[in-house]
Image (cartoon, rainbow, N blue to C red; front, side, top):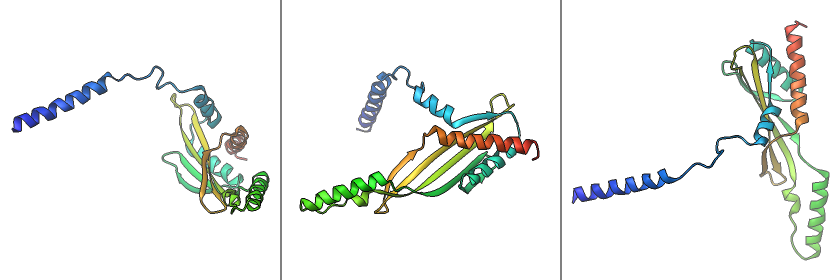
Length: 185
């Protein structure tokens, strides 16, 4: 009886492994798409220095200049995290919600579109600085995300910010800060 159970278990295992082994990986499965490459180019820059601490100090300064509060930093890992609170209300969104609530009230319903309007947000910045593969430069990658709360204090959106202007503003400030630091100005 025991041998039969064991044989049955082993048969099921080998059958499952055989079925899994027949599955194939789609062509180009691990190849990043064009959008991923564009996003990486937007988020990354290299600087002609090997002084990672200088870069991280400049990163912290630029984030503070942009209104962020430093939340966490780990110099040994080349990591800086910061956040800032901001208003998320939109005049168009509010006007649309008021209009929908009025239509609902006229129809005898109980409109609550205002509760779904955005109220506040927290913008988070995460920065990683690390030596390049050749060891002659420092690569910096920054990402900006936002968490949006609605009028009912519920999270309504969590998204990565892909606005090139924000990244350009950060990297312009970082380039200036690195230059000034290198010139001891």
